[in-house]
Structure formats: structure tokens, C-alpha cells
Image (cartoon, rainbow, N blue to C red; front, top):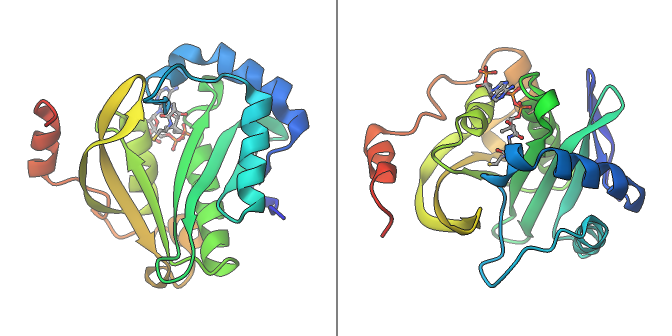
Length: 212
Ligand SMILES: CC(C)(COP(=O)(O)OP(=O)(O)OC[C@H]1O[C@@H](n2cnc3c(N)ncnc32)[C@H](O)[C@@H]1OP(=O)(O)O)[C@@H](O)C(=O)NCCC(=O)NCCS
């Protein structure tokens, strides 16, 4: 149901129950690295049961609402990429979230994984729009969308509950028809339009102000 997609040493494939032990170890070993950027539950403590989380991701995928991928690098689990909030019909849009373990950072694994997933969603599923929302402080993640030419769409105040509070996010998106050759090909060919992912100074300044 969920495809296996490859580019060089990077593979994305559907998450499985038997990934739980390895993912649990990575999530624990990378607590400090991940915590600042992790979605949290506004109504109470987080559930760190990785098996239950995989079950829920797979159920969500069966319902056609998400694509939960594991990211592998040279055959080793490096992180996760989730296509979530798939909306079909006249919106035909989805959102991507991701992480890699700290020891895998800086090898363009995530942009490769995002490009593979987005191309699949556009060309095989017929989705029309892919969105990525990022905290203004997350410079590494902002580089991911900048590399791939996701277009800046705007600042959403106190948009997602992250690390224990509602946080502002910069939102970026791509639309299928702006990518005749696909996200991955455009990036590898070096033809990403410069400046697409640049956040205007006014929004950067607004994000420095205390939230509403
Ligand atoms: C954001 C993240 C997914 C990027 O993944 P990645 O596979 O390292 O992506 P890239 O290799 O393209 O690196 C992106 C930027 O990270 C920064 N970076 C590289 N190595 C790094 C390291 N060891 N430590 C911190 N930042 C690093 C660089 O600025 C890099 O940009 P550059 O390639 O222009 O130098 C990863 O840093 C991560 O998992 N962070 C914690 C979780 C998170 O922030 N998730 C996203 C929430 S929106």
C-alpha cells in the first residue's frame, strides 16, 4: 500500500510494527536533538508508546489519510517522514513532517526523502498541493524547504502545539503544476527558482514579537 522509493543511499518505505524497537531507541537516544521540534498534546502528557504510534499511523494510512514512511540511509533507519492530513477532493492537499537522528544530519537525507514523497503524492496519488510548516527558529528545517524551492506562503500564529506550547510557524507549499519534471529532478538539475523559500523581513520581524 505504501511504496518503497529510492534515490542514491536514501530509501523511504512504509513503517512496520517491527521497526518499533529501533525507532524507540533512536527517539530515546535523540531526545535532546528532537524535543524542541516535537509535536505535543495540548490536553495532557505525551504518549511515548512507539508501537501504539505505529499502529495508529498504519490505521490512518489504511483510511487514506496519511503515508507513514521510515527514512533509511544505506539500509539503516535514519528517521521518519510522515505525509499527514491528506485531504482528497477539491482540496487534494497534504502536509509533511520529518526528523532524522543527529548522527545522520547534514547529508541532505531529508530533502531527498521529502522530494521522493512529494513526487509520489503528485504523480501517483494525484494530490495537488504539499505543505510544510516550520518553527521560525528551526534553521536546519528551513534549509530543507529552501533547497527544494517550497514557496513561502505565510506566518501562522500559535499554529501547532510543539514542545509544550502553541508555536508560530512559517508555512511553505508546492503545487503539482509548478513542477513539470518533479521536485527531485528540479533540485538535482539545479533549477530550483532562487528565493522561493525566502521569508519576507516583515514576517521574520513579526515572528520575533510575543505571540498574540
Ligand atoms: C531538520 C532536519 C530534519 C534536517 O534534516 P537533514 O537530513 O540534516 O537535512 P540537510 O542535510 O538538508 O541539512 C539541513 C541543514 O541542517 C544544518 N545542519 C547540517 N548538519 C547539522 C548538524 N550536524 N547539526 C545541526 N544542524 C545541521 C545545516 O544548516 C543544513 O543546511 P546546509 O545543507 O545548507 O548546510 C534535521 O535537522 C532534524 O531532524 N532536526 C530535528 C527534528 C526537526 O527539526 N524536524 C523538523 C521539524 S519542522
